[in-house]
Image (cartoon, rainbow, N blue to C red):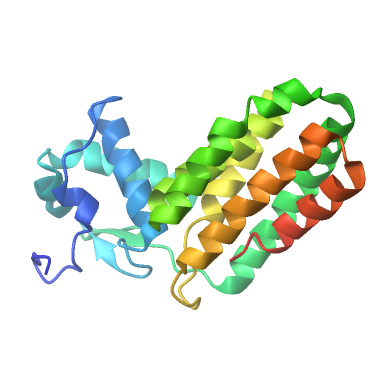
Length: 225
């Protein structure tokens, strides 16, 4: 069981693990907090303080607060004066709204790319789809979230529109935070989602536009799971 500090909710497992040395301390903490949001270990509606999280990460409260303020800008948490940061509570209707907006951006873009991008460039994305499949098979929701975003970003990146990739990526990240009124995430959902990536790639490589159209629309119809 996790230890509690000042009657705060349990600090997520990620806070007790060593953080990979890849970016700045702030960047490392931000990555870990985002993973904790996706996994639900930073629970919707709960308040977490910078010092408590910093103690678990083995860093000062400063990089934690900096990372949390980035999450405030992203809409993941809100400031609670003199206490810390409360994880935003969202409902399944919020996820459905995000899925609808993502579909407005990504579906026409993907269908347009299906008509113009040569098969070899789609083949190059297979390792990203495979990474998502592997994360889903492990039931690792946080790793799957990263792999899922990477696959979608790579697909949209073929458009050459960096602004579109940034906007779609932000919406995608928000869509991955669990809803407070949703049932617990199931590994089967991740596996099904990953399978759709592979099926979509196969259709794109084969330049089968009717199948691509059907798969893309089905994928976003289930994007709020």
